Amino acid sequence: MQLGLILGDQLSRALPTLAELDRHQDVLVMAEVAEEATYVGHHKQKIAFLFSAMRHFAAELRDAGWQVHYYAWGEHHCDDLEAVLADALGRTGAEAVVVTQCGEYRLQQRIDQQWSSRLACPVHCLEDSRFLGRLEDFARWASGKKQLRMEFFYRQMRRRTGLLMDGDQPVGGQWNFDASNRKAYKGEVPLPPPLTFQHDDLDAQVLALVERAFADHIGSLTAFHWGTTRSQALAALAHFIEHRLPWFGDYQDAMVTGEDGLFHSLLSPYLNAGLLDPWEVCRAAEQAWYDGAAPLNAVEGFIRQILGWREYVRGIYWLLMPDYAAENRLGNQRALPGYYWSGDTGMHCMRESLRNTLEHAYAHHIQRLMVTGNFALLLGVLPEAICRWYLEVYADAYEWVELPNTLGMVMHADGGYLGSKPYAASGSYIQRMSDYCKHCRYNVKTASEEDSCPFNSLYWHFIHRHRRQFAGNHRMRMIYRNLDRMDPARVEAILARAESLLADPEVL
Ligand code: FAD
Ligand code: DLZ
Ligand code: SF4
Image (cartoon, rainbow, N blue to C red):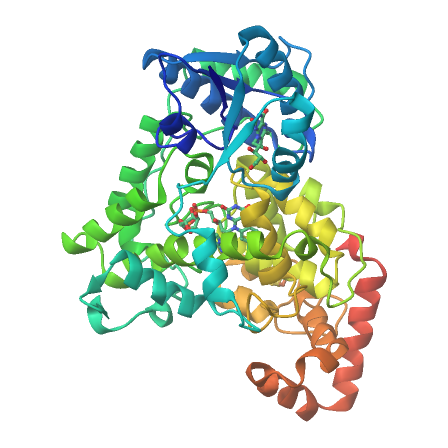
C-alpha cells in the first residue's frame, strides 16, 4: 500500500499522484499544518480559500471512492507535512509515499533530500504535468542565453501548442497585439457584473476558524468572494469569458478608483491551486475568438499571460533557485514602509492598490507592477522584504510565480535576466492609465515642490542614482538624454526633494 500526499495547491483530479495510485488499495493524505500556513504571514483570505478548497476536494475524492486521511487544523499535533506523513505511515502501515513535485524550492528540498531517510521509506516524487510546458524543455531553451526574452519563449509555446495558430503562422498575422492593449478606461463599456459565490457549511466553518486562529494575519475576511470548488472555479471561468474577456485587451493596463478587478479574470488563485487547468482556460479563450465572441487583441493578450508569462516565470524559478532569491544587483537596502500593511498613505494610487490587496487578497497586474512594485523599486527597498510582502498578501501567491515577478520584473534585482529594462515609471504613467491622480493630495504635474507627486521625484532620483547600471541600455538611452537636457538647477531641486522623501518615506 502507498500513501499519496496531496498539497494545498494540488487540488486537481488530473494530479499525477492520483494517476499513479489505486483508489482501491492506496490511501491519500491531506493536511492543514502550521508550517505551511505560517512560514509567511499569509493573508487571511489565502488561508481560508486554500483550507476550504482542500476540504471540498477531500470530500470530492471520498465521493469518488478514495480513502482520504484529512488532518484538519486543531485536530492533530503535527507541525509540518513530514510529521503528518510519519503519523499516517504509522496508522496505515503504508510502505511508500507518493507526491507530485511541489511549487516551492523550500519544500521541494525537503522532499528530495530529507523525507525518504527521515521517514525510513521510499518517497516517489512525480513530475508536475499541470503546466503547458516541461521544465526540462525550458532549461534547454534557456541554455546558453545570457538574457531571456519572454516574447521568443512565447512564440515557441504558440507553435508547440498550436494555440491561435494557422499552420506555422500566428492567426491574424501578428504574434502580439500589445500595442492596442493600453487604453485608459473612461466608461466606454459597462463594467462587468460582480461574481460572488454562495458559501456552504464547509466555507463557513473555515472562515470562522481562520478568523479565530489567524487573527494576527494581514487582511480581512469581510469581502471573501472566492469560490472554493472546481465547479465554482469553472463558473468563474465562464463568467470571465462572457463578461470580461471581450474587453480584457483594451483595458488590460487600466486602473479606476473603486474598481478592483476591472476586466481581469481573477482566475489566478484557481489556476495556482489546481482548481483550473491552464490548458482548459486557454482553450476556452481561444474558442471565444473562433466563435466571434471576443476580439483577437483580447484573446491573444490573455493567452499570452498564461501560455507566455506564467510558464516563463516558472521556468526561470526552477532554473535559477536557490541563488535567484538572494539576488540584489541594484544594492537596495531600504525597509518596506508601514503603509504596505495598513494601506494608510496619502498617495491615492497606493492607497487604492493597497485597499484592494487588504480587502480582497487581490490586485490586478498593473496595480502590482506599476504602483506598489514601481514604488518599492523607486524607493530602493530590499528585494527580500518586498518579495516576502508579495508572497504574504495575495490569494494566488506561491514562490514559483511570485519571486520572478517581484525580484526580476519589478525590482530588476537579477540584472535584467528576466526583462530587458526596469519598469520604473513616474506619476505620468499612472495619470495616463488611471483616474487616481485626480483624487490625490499630490500634484502629478510637478517633481520638486513640497506637494509634488512622490513618484515623479523618486523616478528621477532612481534614474540618476543608477546611471552606471542603465546608461548603456539602449532602451533607456532616451531617458538619460532627457535627464541630461534638463536645467541643472531643476535636476538639483528634484533630487533634493527626492532625498527628503527618502529620509522619511513613512510620512507619505
Ligand atoms: P489576469 O490579468 O486575468 O491574467 C490571466 C492569468 O494570466 C492570471 O490568472 C495568471 O495566471 C496569468 N498571469 C498574468 N500575468 C502573469 C505574470 N506576470 N506571471 C505569471 N502569470 C501571469 N501571479 C500569481 O499567480 N501569483 C503571484 O504570486 C504573483 N505575484 C506577482 C507579483 C508581482 C510583483 C507582479 C508584478 C505580478 C505578480 N503576479 C502573480 C502576476 C499577475 O499580477 C497575477 O497573475 C494577476 O494579477 C492575477 O490576476 P488575474 O487572475 O485577474 O490575472
Ligand atoms: C499556502 C498553503 C497554506 C496556507 N496552507 C497549507 C496547508 O496547510 N497544507 C498544505 O498542504 N498546503 C498549504 N499551502 C500550500 C503549500 O504552502 C504549497 O503546497 C507549497 O508552498 C508548495 O507549493
Ligand atoms: Fe499616485 Fe502621484 Fe498620481 Fe498621487 S499624483 S495618485 S501619488 S501618481
